[in-house]
Length: 150
View (tube, rainbow, N blue to C red):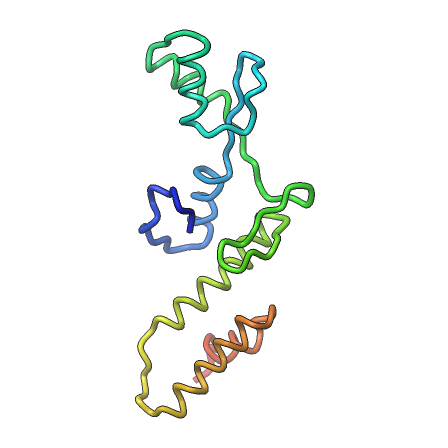
């Protein structure tokens, strides 16, 4: 979902695995440990900044410095993030996981082949997907597709 993600084609079996990836790879920022005004840098930018501005370091030293300078920057009320699919502002990790997770479920269901070739049933299924993507609640949609009673 992120344009520059090196693991963009990876599948996650559980939502918590995907959110952990987001926390570790996409919601991290780095700050220069030498009190420079460099804030909210990427790991690559900080690595370049330290070597070009503060002198050469061994790779081991540089790795240790970089590791101490990272922090997690999660969505919050004061610093929301946008949904990568619909651009809605999201103010917490839990809301992000639930909101974007719903989009991912919808996309997954949409991609599944139809069990029945009847055109009318396919039209009804499409209207259910459209209903969910246009309305924020998923209760009706989930009850129909994920009910445990047979």
